[in-house]
Image (cartoon, rainbow, N blue to C red):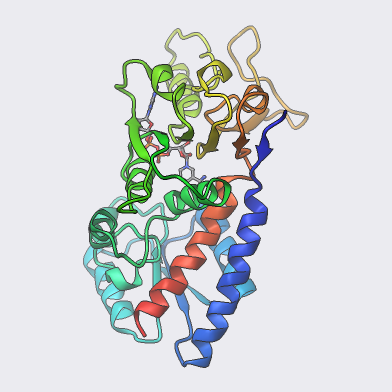
Length: 325
Ligand code: NAD
């Protein structure tokens, strides 16, 4: 029997509907949710995100403003601006757009956002609340991964859960969210780059969450060396988790987004598309086609965790507005 394909777009739509009704209720109580994105200078990649944020907020009735500061703003002045937004009671949420210019230390600025307005759930206070329990927000991608998991397998109590990846923004918070319940959490193992026998862990996982981004890291590493003129062979861009590493019937959440070439020619150059650019594809860390024959359910990449991550930003925005009420 083929696996259930976990439809991230459908889950994201449901969350957006919930957010829309929450936003309307908050407005009726005079607590209009209002998200401000802080951007320094102009950046095409950042603009793509801010346009998406604006569209998403508008579609659910959240007010959205983009405040763009000059490229050469000093760190002290930027912190001053954040302070003003913290004190503005009409602003209920804030997001700091990346990348930032060199003179700005992103971490130092990010911690100046009031934890109550931290819609990304990345402030150390909110990370601490995640650890102790009882926080109002958490980082969006971990929330998305766990939301998809719980909607697919509501009973996680005592199950063998394996998380691959232990970064502060993805892997570790996923483990914390899985351990949130006092009496109904799964048993969580966290694997990472120094894990000796990854397959031994993934093979016993009833629930597997993978967030490593290995094939993209290999491709970028190869590309860097090649540009420096080093004599390197194209890397094998095979998935980190192959079908033989999976447990029959497992629920698999593939968080990774690897943008990698479709293949290489004999000179080690990526194959080209019709426009003469590198022909690229987007894949996760799990061998999706192979997994379909083996697991109980799996998220596709793209179309799994990604769309739900965006919906979680909206959900966090509502949670911040409520917390200010
Ligand atoms: P990161 O580079 O900060 O961390 C990578 C993690 O993978 C590390 O914990 C490392 O120990 C682990 N790892 C590396 N090689 C490994 C190996 N061979 N075996 C086991 N573990 C290994 O990356 P990140 O920011 O945590 O992101 C992880 C992935 O999630 C990336 O592919 C990223 O693009 C993706 N991501 C997706 C979303 C989304 O919305 N879906 C959002 C953020 C990140």
